[in-house]
Image 1 (tube, rainbow, N blue to C red):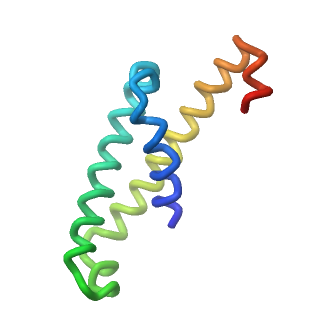
Image 2: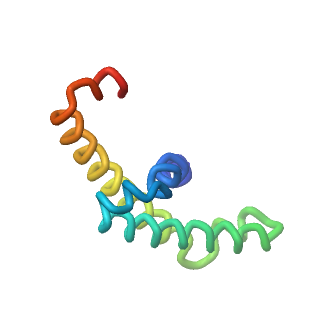
Amino acid sequence: LGVQRAWMYLESIFTAPDIQKQLPQETVQFLRVDQNWKDIMRKTKKRANVIDAACAPGVLEMFQEANRVLEKIQKSLEDYLETKRMGFPRFYFLS
């Protein structure tokens, strides 16, 4: 659930071209996680049994790695936004 929540939050942010330009490394990392997430969801849709889908080889490891990468991306995004807020104090009111 943590991976899904983080992915949903970051997906809308990293589809914006301006964020992709400002955070190119994080964009590449997110796109890799995004592709893995969508692959797992396609495979899960094909399996009728949730236990089979959840216990498929590599699924747990993929989720653990995705969670680690998404947390790192989120931290970088927060740092980036903090630098913008320092340059534009009125952003504190908007965030």
